[in-house]
Image 1: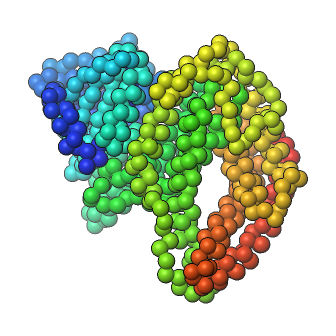
Image 2: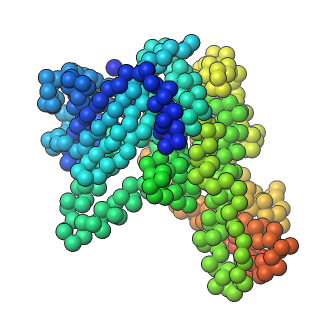
Image 3: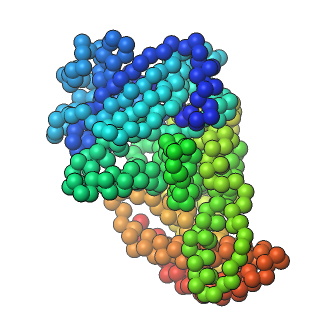
Length: 537
């Protein structure tokens, strides 16, 4: 069967409240063993197989990826004991995967969970609420589990989002897209590396690998089927962006280590913002050809992009620019550089977490077909700063769900993307025909266009993996690097300029940064001239 569920992490301060809210719920002890090959063939295929004891019963379960990030194919079989039987999957959707395994399955990790379970009816369906507390364990390593799952029993999938967002706001919950299998597999990998190390280095390897456990989640390559409609393709792209954004946000929110250690880093903020930028780029890339989230959701993305951007600018200045200023002889300035909310505080905000769940909801409820008025038109008419939804929609609890007009067959995605990307390239190379080089904001605008182009090309390569765009991408990357450095120095100049009324020593920074910006502008112009006037697809 296919299951649809939403998982939310329960922070330390909310655990007693949720336990009280589920005081009359059924309590079940769940102990499970998870299996995979030594080289993780199941994990690489986004599948997991386990034996779980539920009271006195044993259940063998296989899970595989479903149609979207919320859906999973789940096959359950009762067993007489903790004995794995792969013959049960003959003739099922799992058979092709299991027959390809080239190595035997072995025990990789275990879970030990206490589950509070209840069903709740809503006007849109029946939802099973499961609050899990316990650990996932591999060898001597453990990760804590404190999560509440909302699984659809019957009715419309909107039911789990309505209920999930209500709980999110009542209990300050946090979206965590990692499954127990994801965490267990990560721990098992660490144990494998520790066991492979010589005795003298085991402790060092363990510390290094545990630190890597919460490394920033970087962008991963997209994979697109050419037969998808534009809207379906956009939903698949959005799922990857949500995973990058939400996982980095979860690490910033210290979901595993709150009260134990601090793992939040500036790079988590950077990669979170990369995920947001990719999402904005994809919306613009598919504008007028696909259904998009409603305007309020797009506005929220821009809002949080700016809020995280403020912390990112400060981190960049302190880590990269301030050392150059000090080396150049800038007097010491005693000031608290961090102002406003920290990235961790923003990541924990119910408003931000609600926004992430709303995005996730959109990917499962968007129409499968494209707007009827979608046209392969000249993109110069598209305003890059305001993406408009091209088809009328019905809003249900803040979600863009039901089109009020008919839809049509999917367009030729390749041709649509090629035309739009060439129009974007035209806008980049002709930028100074219409903008003033004395305006620093005009340089920032070019940088944004270049970033958008890089992300757009990632989508095109997902659709056309054989495309050879290396020469163009190399030139574009050089331009992005130069314009990015220029942006960082310009932000630092703005920051220190504001300090001069109260800290006269900041004038040193103003003068030095102004000189650097003059040089960087010349470098930026040079990299821009190296771009071709048309992309040869």
